[in-house]
Image: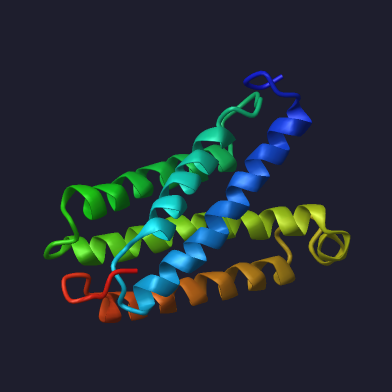
Length: 166
Protein backbone atom coordinates (compact mmCIF):
# COMPACT_ATOMS: atom_id res chain seq x y z
CA UNK A 1 0.00 0.00 0.00
CA UNK A 2 1.10 3.53 -0.82
CA UNK A 3 -0.72 6.42 0.90
CA UNK A 4 -3.65 4.10 1.55
CA UNK A 5 -3.90 2.85 -2.04
CA UNK A 6 -2.93 -0.50 -3.48
CA UNK A 7 0.24 -0.36 -5.58
CA UNK A 8 -1.89 -0.78 -8.71
CA UNK A 9 -4.26 2.04 -7.79
CA UNK A 10 -1.37 4.30 -6.82
CA UNK A 11 0.38 3.51 -10.12
CA UNK A 12 -2.80 4.40 -12.01
CA UNK A 13 -3.07 7.69 -10.10
CA UNK A 14 0.59 8.47 -10.81
CA UNK A 15 0.11 7.77 -14.53
CA UNK A 16 -3.02 9.95 -14.69
CA UNK A 17 -1.18 12.83 -13.00
CA UNK A 18 1.72 12.35 -15.45
CA UNK A 19 -0.62 12.45 -18.44
CA UNK A 20 -2.28 15.60 -17.10
CA UNK A 21 1.20 17.10 -16.77
CA UNK A 22 2.09 16.20 -20.34
CA UNK A 23 -1.19 17.46 -21.84
CA UNK A 24 -1.27 20.69 -19.84
CA UNK A 25 2.44 21.18 -20.57
CA UNK A 26 1.72 21.05 -24.29
CA UNK A 27 -0.99 23.69 -23.80
CA UNK A 28 1.32 25.84 -21.66
CA UNK A 29 4.07 25.67 -24.30
CA UNK A 30 1.54 26.50 -27.03
CA UNK A 31 0.55 29.61 -25.05
CA UNK A 32 4.22 30.47 -24.60
CA UNK A 33 4.94 30.12 -28.31
CA UNK A 34 1.78 32.13 -29.05
CA UNK A 35 3.20 34.90 -26.82
CA UNK A 36 0.35 34.68 -24.32
CA UNK A 37 0.78 35.30 -20.62
CA UNK A 38 0.93 32.14 -18.49
CA UNK A 39 -2.52 31.23 -17.26
CA UNK A 40 -4.49 28.30 -15.93
CA UNK A 41 -2.83 25.65 -18.12
CA UNK A 42 0.59 26.78 -16.95
CA UNK A 43 -0.48 26.44 -13.31
CA UNK A 44 -1.98 23.00 -14.00
CA UNK A 45 1.21 21.97 -15.81
CA UNK A 46 3.51 23.10 -13.00
CA UNK A 47 1.36 21.58 -10.22
CA UNK A 48 0.75 18.25 -11.95
CA UNK A 49 4.39 17.91 -12.96
CA UNK A 50 5.49 18.61 -9.39
CA UNK A 51 3.01 15.96 -8.23
CA UNK A 52 4.29 13.52 -10.86
CA UNK A 53 7.87 13.90 -9.67
CA UNK A 54 6.95 13.83 -5.98
CA UNK A 55 4.69 10.77 -6.22
CA UNK A 56 7.42 8.91 -8.10
CA UNK A 57 9.46 8.88 -4.90
CA UNK A 58 6.70 7.01 -3.07
CA UNK A 59 7.17 3.81 -5.09
CA UNK A 60 9.10 1.19 -3.15
CA UNK A 61 12.71 0.83 -4.25
CA UNK A 62 15.70 -0.87 -2.68
CA UNK A 63 18.20 1.65 -4.07
CA UNK A 64 18.47 5.04 -5.72
CA UNK A 65 18.31 4.70 -9.48
CA UNK A 66 17.69 6.69 -12.66
CA UNK A 67 14.00 7.37 -11.84
CA UNK A 68 15.05 9.02 -8.56
CA UNK A 69 17.68 11.13 -10.28
CA UNK A 70 15.25 12.28 -12.99
CA UNK A 71 12.63 13.02 -10.33
CA UNK A 72 15.06 15.05 -8.22
CA UNK A 73 16.31 17.00 -11.24
CA UNK A 74 12.74 17.65 -12.30
CA UNK A 75 11.81 19.02 -8.88
CA UNK A 76 14.83 21.35 -8.89
CA UNK A 77 13.99 22.60 -12.39
CA UNK A 78 10.34 23.04 -11.41
CA UNK A 79 11.30 25.03 -8.31
CA UNK A 80 13.33 27.38 -10.50
CA UNK A 81 10.49 27.67 -13.05
CA UNK A 82 8.01 28.51 -10.29
CA UNK A 83 10.40 31.07 -8.80
CA UNK A 84 10.95 32.67 -12.21
CA UNK A 85 7.21 32.84 -12.94
CA UNK A 86 5.62 33.56 -9.59
CA UNK A 87 8.47 35.04 -7.55
CA UNK A 88 10.36 37.10 -10.11
CA UNK A 89 7.35 37.61 -12.44
CA UNK A 90 9.42 36.82 -15.55
CA UNK A 91 11.29 40.12 -15.35
CA UNK A 92 14.59 40.45 -17.15
CA UNK A 93 16.59 37.25 -17.42
CA UNK A 94 13.89 35.37 -15.48
CA UNK A 95 11.81 35.20 -18.68
CA UNK A 96 14.46 33.05 -20.36
CA UNK A 97 15.06 31.08 -17.15
CA UNK A 98 11.34 30.28 -17.06
CA UNK A 99 11.23 29.22 -20.73
CA UNK A 100 14.22 26.92 -20.32
CA UNK A 101 13.17 25.37 -17.01
CA UNK A 102 9.51 24.91 -17.98
CA UNK A 103 10.58 23.13 -21.15
CA UNK A 104 13.14 21.05 -19.25
CA UNK A 105 10.43 19.95 -16.81
CA UNK A 106 8.14 18.97 -19.67
CA UNK A 107 11.02 17.19 -21.40
CA UNK A 108 11.76 15.15 -18.26
CA UNK A 109 8.12 14.05 -18.26
CA UNK A 110 8.28 13.24 -21.99
CA UNK A 111 11.59 11.40 -21.51
CA UNK A 112 10.00 9.15 -18.88
CA UNK A 113 6.93 8.67 -21.10
CA UNK A 114 9.19 7.36 -23.90
CA UNK A 115 10.97 5.06 -21.44
CA UNK A 116 7.61 3.73 -20.23
CA UNK A 117 6.29 3.33 -23.78
CA UNK A 118 9.31 1.21 -24.76
CA UNK A 119 8.88 -0.82 -21.57
CA UNK A 120 5.10 -1.34 -21.69
CA UNK A 121 4.11 -1.42 -25.40
CA UNK A 122 4.95 -4.82 -26.85
CA UNK A 123 5.85 -3.59 -30.35
CA UNK A 124 8.26 -0.99 -28.95
CA UNK A 125 9.65 -3.44 -26.40
CA UNK A 126 10.47 -5.82 -29.27
CA UNK A 127 12.43 -3.03 -30.98
CA UNK A 128 14.44 -2.18 -27.86
CA UNK A 129 14.21 -4.90 -25.21
CA UNK A 130 16.88 -3.39 -22.94
CA UNK A 131 16.19 0.29 -23.66
CA UNK A 132 19.65 0.87 -25.08
CA UNK A 133 19.08 -0.15 -28.70
CA UNK A 134 19.13 2.32 -31.63
CA UNK A 135 15.30 2.70 -31.93
CA UNK A 136 15.05 3.78 -28.29
CA UNK A 137 18.00 6.14 -28.59
CA UNK A 138 16.61 7.58 -31.83
CA UNK A 139 13.22 8.20 -30.21
CA UNK A 140 14.86 9.98 -27.28
CA UNK A 141 17.04 12.07 -29.60
CA UNK A 142 13.99 13.15 -31.63
CA UNK A 143 12.15 14.15 -28.46
CA UNK A 144 15.20 16.06 -27.22
CA UNK A 145 15.60 17.84 -30.59
CA UNK A 146 11.95 18.91 -30.52
CA UNK A 147 12.37 20.36 -27.03
CA UNK A 148 15.57 22.19 -27.94
CA UNK A 149 13.79 23.72 -30.94
CA UNK A 150 10.82 24.70 -28.75
CA UNK A 151 13.23 26.27 -26.26
CA UNK A 152 14.87 28.38 -28.96
CA UNK A 153 11.47 29.47 -30.30
CA UNK A 154 10.14 30.13 -26.82
CA UNK A 155 13.13 32.27 -25.87
CA UNK A 156 12.64 34.33 -29.04
CA UNK A 157 8.85 34.63 -29.06
CA UNK A 158 7.74 34.72 -25.45
CA UNK A 159 7.56 38.25 -24.07
CA UNK A 160 5.01 38.22 -21.26
CA UNK A 161 5.31 41.94 -20.57
CA UNK A 162 3.77 42.59 -23.98
CA UNK A 163 1.70 39.41 -24.28
CA UNK A 164 -2.06 39.10 -24.25
CA UNK A 165 -3.67 37.20 -21.35
CA UNK A 166 -4.07 33.47 -22.01
